[in-house]
Length: 188
Image: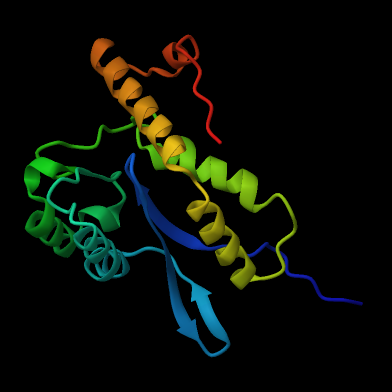
């Protein structure tokens, strides 16, 4: 007999991008007795990721003052310490999230490029072959993220802009059926 885990290895990962570059991946984990353990996102962990990883990475690239940060309505994203930190670095007019002047639309179609493209793409390439352990999973995620070209990022951002334009043109209605009629975009 050989014991096998009931569920496959999982990682909780944050990543963001703009047309020119990707920031991340940043993994949510804690160090346990036998090594890193994947953990869920809560307000403390999310605030720590912003303060210690994302904001310094954007400052290093000299673009924290030009970024518009979009995030969905998950509770950790709108916790008071998170909102205070975001206001300090991004100001109200460059944050799209609940409880900010520009709210993330409730029950919105997939507007965020990470949701409508990145996670699906990574799922397809990362899980193409069996994964032996959590370290291999994290390495594959990191490698495939670093392999994404600037041309691909630019194409994804252009597709996001199209989505926003269609939402404006159709008064906030769901747009998926309009996207299928628009010019297809291929992502590599």
